[in-house]
Length: 88
Image (tube, rainbow, N blue to C red; front, side, top):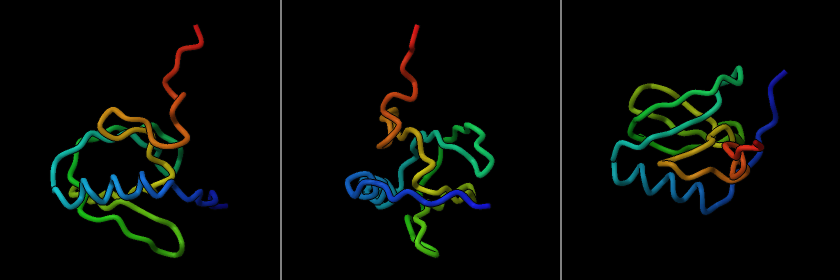
């Protein structure tokens, strides 16, 4: 069964579109389809929607759902602000 898509905040989507327009390499941390934590440095080719789900297309060939992005350029994505917080 596929995980439901959780729409992301408009400001976050617009930030990603801005990176795509500038065609610069960015650091990106995200979850894969099987919930693996992955990290990459790539150029966003485009931000698009398919079947009511928004994605990033990277120059590496990867497609990433926007709701699976954890951090971009060191800034947490909406909903992941406390993901790296230490409960020590």
